[in-house]
Length: 285
Image (cartoon, rainbow, N blue to C red; front, side, top):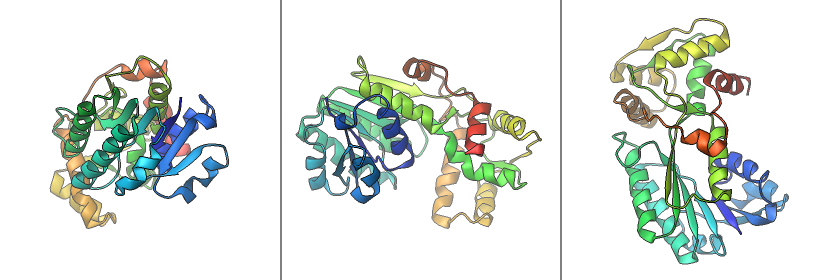
């Protein structure tokens, strides 16, 4: 059985590949990457490195050839670009006769009001229409997404947010990687949806945990979206990123990531890494 991971040199993808290599032979694993040179270290370990670019559909036909189980890691970019790229990948998988597709989606993708959701909603629908057995890994929020804000706190800044009382199911990328590897290598995952969420925490609860790890109080500054954008701009965030950041804050505020689930434990066979332990790992890095 040959399995393939797209985006294998990215932050999440590389963790998934390393986890898979502890479960399967390198000969059974292929990766699809835009720049094969960046995956040379994997080729040297026996992994089948293939060139595959979601914006060049002709490369995907060869990349997915002979693959039984495929993990599509959602791409980066604006919504329209990502929908186009994902649609290309799914079409290529169908043409290649792939027997199973796992996809890294978003929390409550089918109904979520957050601005990121349409990409995942459309991609899930496109996969379902192929008739290929699937598993949607609806990832909540990567703890690593908060690395910049944590660094600011370490430098003495307050935790700034406009998310109000909205809660998030933060978890380490490694936990998400292990869940994805479990689905790709395991049985009984056809036509499944997993809501992968850590324990739900408000911004206040999160900063309390961060304060425990740092052994000092972390002050929190709740502001409105406009003030949040201004403060992020003053911190050096490029203008084109500001609407994305405020959109995420708005999504959290209206409960888009407030999805409670025990699916992580089902796939991991253990509880998700506790938030204080996870923060310690991230900070000690």
